[in-house]
Image (cartoon, rainbow, N blue to C red):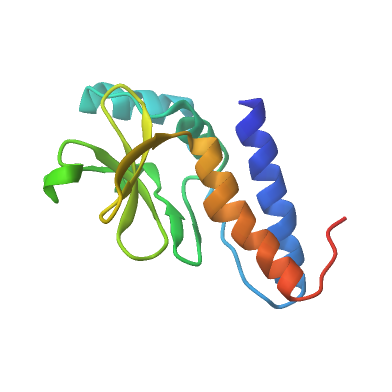
Amino acid sequence: MYRVKELFDKIVIIADILEKNDIDNFKFPKGISEESVKNWEKENHAFLPQGYKEFLLLANGFRMHGSEIYPLEQVTRLDFPDEFKGYYAIGSYIGDGSLILADNNGKFYLGDHADGIEESTFEAFVKRWILEGMEEAVEENGIHLP
C-alpha cells in the first residue's frame, strides 16, 4: 500500500494548495473498509486491481477535470461497447468516454474507444491523469510546490 498512499498524500497536498489559491475545490470521500472490498469481490466473483483497492481504503472515489476514480458502489460490469464488454469500469479519463477498466483477475487497463485497450497500472494512471494535471494547474498559476 505504500506506493498508493504516497501518491494519495501528494494529491491531498496539491489539492490543498489549489484550494487555498481559489483554483479548484476537491472532495475526498471517506475511505471504505477492506471488508467492503472483499465482499464486493466475493459477490461479483472478480478481483479488483490492487492499487485501486488500496485507493478505496483512503478515499472511496475521486474526481478531477475529466478524470474520475469511481467509488466502489459505482463499479459496473460492461455489456457494451463490444471492445469493453466483460470488463469492469472503475473510472474514466480525458472526459470523452475513455474508461479505466479491470478484468475478473484484477488486471488494470486503460480503455480508449479510439486506441483500444492497453494494460497499465493504477499507479501509472494516477500519475499521468491526476497528478500531472494537478501539477500543471499549479505551474500555470505560478504557484510553487513545497
